Length: 72
Ligand SMILES: [Zn+2]
Ligand SMILES: [Zn+2]
Image 1: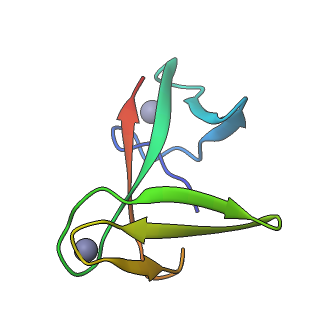
Image 2: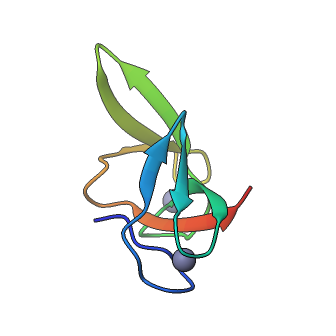
């Protein structure tokens, strides 16, 4: 579920970003480590998306990552 951080409206996926129809704002999705809270590096391998945390030196699955939407 991708919700607008401001108005909680469901965001619409648009060319790699997420748009809120009611705020007219474009957001990008950032993933953060559940352990150290650093921003994760996105890895796309074989169609599956996973994340890598440099400080933890560990692969993170997208289900354990914490997500944040930030205005582009
Ligand atoms: Zn909104
Ligand atoms: Zn980490």
